[in-house]
Length: 90
Image (cartoon, rainbow, N blue to C red; front, top):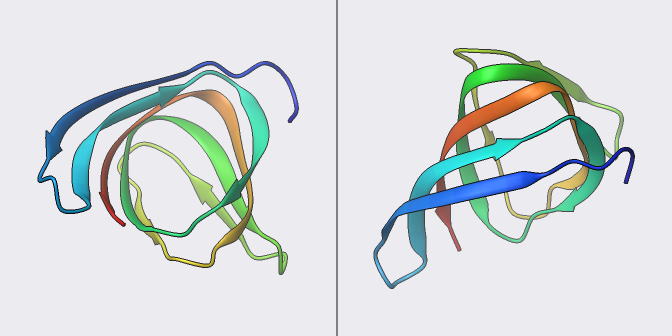
């Protein structure tokens, strides 16, 4: 981990069967991510990058949307405090 990012999560939906949705926020920093679930992300505010272990980099900002699939391994970096909507299916 780089820096001391602070994360906050507000779940607004949980169907009890492995699908949930809500709002997530993080202050600047960088950390390792390993996904076993499917996640749709829609960036509301902030800037940063998601980098796959293969070197593929996605730079994100307000209005961007993307999906992280099961098996994704890499890093998440927040350059400017980021807020996103998410839908996760486990």
